[in-house]
Image (cartoon, rainbow, N blue to C red; front, side, top):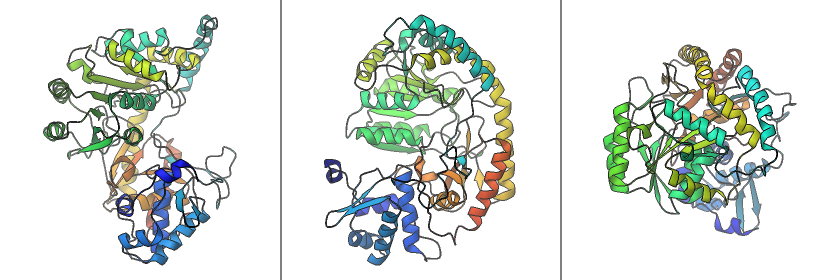
Length: 493
């Protein structure tokens, strides 16, 4: 047992809140339902690895179930490799040494005999023609860099210039020294959260929000301050800026993380007046805004909106804008960026030196070429995504008439109201049918959004139809589902 085993633990009451509404409606198979929920919390990352879980008797008391129920659940989790125990010391969460235990083959193995229908990742396949063309040109560009040492904390000048030019074309004058290239948007989020907050500081976020941003806040030891998205007739939700303003005044957060462009997961788009109010709020309160624009280029109705930072001083350090090559181009290109003041870029770069020494040169050269063609690539995506969104909406209406999906004007996914608080149970049941989902609570704090599910419309149509057929089967067998046997970790993109 190492030092982390001793220091990382979760109390019974906190664990009960994290479990949420885990009981099946018929009140039967309690041990199996508890096992399914704990397994899902571990594999989705909501219950960190190497966390000591409450003792059987303590958890049974808080959950108001028999100790036998908790003991049976813990035994099943140990058998599945999700818990490890030491007599007299306790039990800790872990990932199983053999993720495919209990299955014919791991769905994550390219040579396995199972087909995984991935509806957990809102990500597109690469634009193959444009990517191959950019990669071929980048190889030629590569020769000019081979004589150097290959380390660049700030990013290649050619890529920083391309990113700056794109911001300028969108109405936000930007110089290359206002851009820091990172290893993807997640790296940018983590870097900004680390630079601008400390343990115990408050970070304001929309609720629901991007799961990996919640993880970055938790990893820093900061405290999330969730501000609910308001209702909207199309189901996407909208920002209650009066409520957000009050939350900034009352909580005095050190940072606000917001997704104004096709908000993940709701798909909402903040209008120009709202963007102006955000910048004014940052200026009046001194609260930095971390603005996630990773989906900005994926509007279905036309070109992207003007960046939030364009509604204030172009060189303010109070607005940090995050972008990424992953959504509009391809997830295999691990290149992101932060656009802010030149002084803030230097501050972030100095901090970055303790994490990594720069990104891969060849990938940066590829992305620089792709950004030059972003209008063409995004335009090609637009018709494809509009058709995919409408097809998914039509299929959901036929197969799940009680579900209420959003109808976003951009982004990559729908936010679906299931009409019942069964999102985590459905996610577990769907895995048995080789459909990978991201449960609603992954996008919230303290087990919220059990009535919701994010469904990307990024699968090829024939695979989407097959996935939905399997999802129908999982939904119909929800109440009588047997305990889950698969135990593959997932990350939500």
